[in-house]
Length: 364
Ligand code: SF4
Ligand code: SF4
Image (cartoon, rainbow, N blue to C red; front, side, top):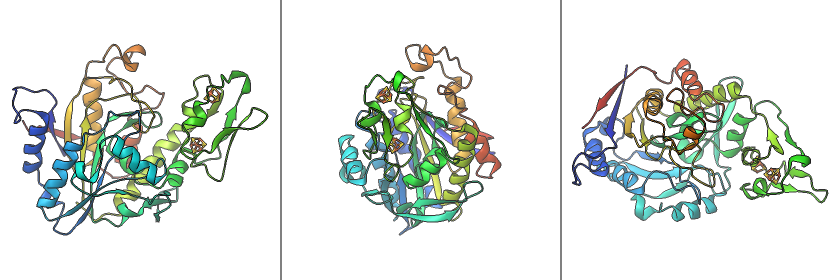
């Protein structure tokens, strides 16, 4: 049974020591990070930097505390994310959300280069065959995976495993997880309201309308992220993704990422704050579906995600949220987009990445 440590989100006394930041500080001093990260290790602190309107992400103060702890061990941390928009824009967006080398206490580096092309090809289980892992992550000796837990249109739940299996791949490899078999984007002009959201959301200007008024995409430039179809609210632009294929591919890619590290060189922290229904890469953040739960720590990505999801499903649904609106109760709360949030976790367990059985240890 894997150990998952946690600190609660509720504050019992009005003092720094009892604040979440104070409890977090005490927790990271108590946890055995020295068994994972050695002097001179380059440690990739993997994070999601949000988007211009998606501000419900991990606060820089927590990242800085972790970087200070790593530097105290003599390690060399750097904060990193793979590109979702081209790298220079990603850094601009990061600064917009308060993430800079100064606020984080460590350099902020684009993991796969400014064009998302710096990857190292490694083998992956069938049917994926191979994936390109961001070079800055591939070459690091250790990794601290910081995940803001939330819903996700494809995997149902976004936590540590998704942060590895999608977040550590270059964009083309990520796109391949979505569309493993040939999938057509289908446009129906009769349903189109000409809102242009599908054009505005594309990070590569690959989504547009031709002179005849038909939606077209630039196949050369496109990363196959699927966002253009995801934001279409009228059903005019659709793409079907095979969920079970995707969820297995995600677990297989996660395994490939973990396999590039030596044993006991990765540690996971799940931030269960502002648990909103969609991914932090979307252009806006909706209100949380449940109240803040706290912060979880583990060296097992399967256990920490399972524990996070179980906590979410046990929590009271916030009535005035997407989950409340859709009449969700506690069971599979994050199944908001028709995708089973447990599927990639169970697939990851089958591939030997960890255990869904865990012991929850309250550090307070
Ligand atoms: S799938 Fe759509 S949004 Fe994504 S890169 Fe391609 S055209 Fe742009
Ligand atoms: S998002 Fe949908 S409705 Fe809006 S312009 Fe694109 S295809 Fe048309």
